[in-house]
Length: 328
Image (cartoon, rainbow, N blue to C red):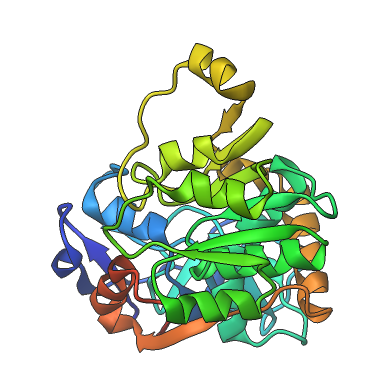
């Protein structure tokens, strides 16, 4: 019998439950995927907690790797037994197996193991969006990366450094700072969890010789938002792509002008890969830069799928470095 993780009401990790989830034969345009590894992402926490409301009861998960078990009518380009991964909805990756739109499945090259694929594809394609669509890296520019020891942060830091960008990472512990330096960060600032970001901008200006950064990649949200804005150089961009500390405040466009003709963007992975052609092209480049060592999958821990609640507790503790992977 197939099983999945779902929740019937928003709340803490304890609302997650292990339930039977019978599967029908895949419908037209679908493929059945037997999961081998499942990625955990902060968007899963947002949905579970109610920050991002979803129809209930709801299954969780956008990211997984596995093997094609069956094909529905009209599916071309995939074979039974083929290794694949995916990175978008409908939700339901927290399951032993599922039927998924075949056009949204990405074939995995032999160079990447399943667990690394599950740890990499959502976070890696998020990094791809940030360095290819949101802002094109320029050698020598300064960039600020919040949560630099997180799943996206480590990939983004290494990728930017490989492109010649000078990265200032922000982390919560000295141990995380060492990890981020190993990924190529020029400088790392330590702000303990619950600490103040009031000195962030002055520290950034000191490191950059008073210039500020061209881009601030901010997945923290409310707590870091003002500090990120104040860290920008004139005509700089704040890419706010997460809200781990809460929703960001409302933006006064006139105030952005007074601060130095700044820009704020709320990028999201899903529009970035909405077109299947864009999805497959982005995944192809991601796997290529992975093979060249420009990015790598960082797995903090592997947990049984039934222990998804513990994975959420770990993620919300901000004690992790890299990704969490669930094993069915």
